Amino acid sequence: MEFTLITGRTIEQGCTKEHAKLSEEYMMSVAVCEMNYEDMMRLNVRDGDNVKIKTEVGSVVVKVRRSRRIRRPGIIFIPFGPWINLILPSETEGTGMPPLKGFRVWVEPTEEPVSNIRELLLRNYGVKG
Amino acid sequence: MRVIEGVVCPFCGCCCDDLEVIVEDNRIVDVRNACALGASKFMGYSKNRNTKPLVRRNGELVEASLEDAIERCAEILANASYPLLYGWSNTSCEAIRVGLELAEEVGGVIDNTTTVCHGPSILAIQEVGIPGCTLGQIRHRADLIIYWGSNPWSAHPRHIERYTALSEGRFQRAAWKRYLSRLILESARKKRYRAASLVFKGGAAALQAAEEEERWMLPPPGERKLVVVDVQKTRSADLADIFIRVEPGGDYEVLQALRALIRDEELDVDEAAGVPVEKLEELSDLMVNARFGVLFFGLGLTMSVGRSRNIEAAIKLTRDLNRYTKFLIMPMRGHFNVTGANIVFTWQTGYPYAVDFSQGYPRYNPGETSAVDVLARGDADATLVIASDPASSFPRKAVENLTKNPLIVIDPVLTPTALMADVIIPTAFVGIEAEGTTYRMDHVPLPLKKVVEPPAGCLSDEEVLRMILGRVRKIRRSDASA
Image 1 (tube, each protein chain N blue to C red):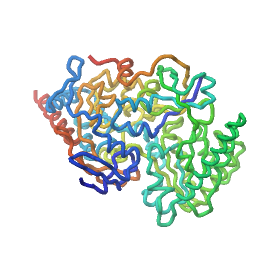
Image 2 (image 1 turned 60 degrees about the vertical axis):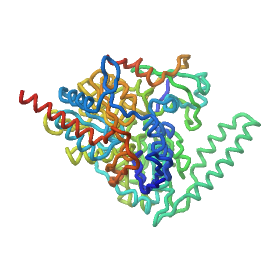
Image 3 (image 1 turned 180 degrees about the vertical axis):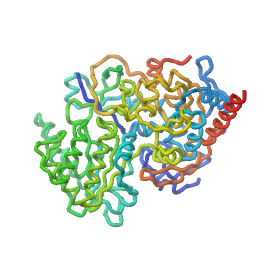
């Protein structure tokens, strides 16, 4: 299903981003996708289920979290972090800034687990020899 | 037990300077006056600490002496033909100054995190200028405060309390009481709704509709008003007198519509990016009738489609408003010293970020010399990352290049970027374990304090950079004479 993705700051992400990026807490605060209840019904997912977010660049698995703040269907919110950056395009249109808010993504329910930060880096960028 | 007063918070661009840190046996036991973000840093900074320099040998990161690690860094930088030096916003101005010297010495590109936060704002400011002021002015005088595409509740938690709507100014009263009574009303209404939704279905829709309507309870003229414009109803929007929901990517349209309305032009549409024109008319009236208005904008404008053009429209709106009243505009800067990074870069090179020294003189062309572009094109053949974590903030293609080439990380903690590094040098936390200068988001310089001693062997960013610079110079001189 197609969605408009918004990324941004949350206070939970802020509390761990400076000194605990390898922690479970950080992962719980950024490897999530906030979604409107109606959209969750349409996708047939529940709070805490895993979903796969896809763009032309790739895909990443994150957890769904119900949000009462996103009122309009068709919009999802994911906090800034390595999970979402993995699937961001890098075109900066001459500004140096990659598109981080308001672009199209595809979301589908999945059984795949959410990778922790070490697995995520290993799988996508490999270990250096 | 020792209480250290007047500590400047090394977290966000607010740089709150009223923190009290309580220290016992070189350990922080408590911190007063800080927000959740600042407190989490002061209280948790030592939990995930890395105190040993690490160097990658045969694919594994192994402990090394500081001298070995510095030597390896110097070799990488001296041998690279186009290295990238990235980060800088979470360190002191003094360290940034040495970093610029290093970039010039190695003929590389130096860029700070502005490039992925307010870079477009700087591009717009260079086009049209910026009417700005200090936060103190706003605290005492502003009667209309607008946050556009910014969520201070989450990213700058004390901004509203210290500098805008909830602060007690000399000429403007804090709006605390009004917000408290609104919160009480709101929670009562929610309770009623929960009771109602137990009885009949469809309660949720009714509540949402009602909530959208109720936003427009304006305080009496002369009192401080808070307006939030965003794509979703953030926690900051809960505090606002007026909340305007814009469709994602629609900011430019709404800003231009407001400019037209302020010039008394008729709009022949019913809505702009999902905002009814009547609402915009009300907002433009509010703006024109304010005695001292200020517009704070965040990444909602810089990261959305249009990027620098959105900021340009916002600044032009502010400029138009100055024909009728006093109106100012300010970017909500994220890292505590990102403003300082821009200042030091500009003072040393003439440009605020994305500076290329490969020609022997500073060159600036964001989109070409900015970190994401340099990496995504695959131009950089080595990277030094300091006080930053591009693996978490850059798109995939840029990170791939980081990992392909030699990577140096200078940071007090192990970050995802550090996991992929060839050399890791731990340093002292600036503002906790090392002194330095930082610039608040309104360009006011503040001294960062050292409240505890760093772990044995951890030097400050500035000292480590000086050592690398010294080694690089030696290697280059011996290469030149050979």
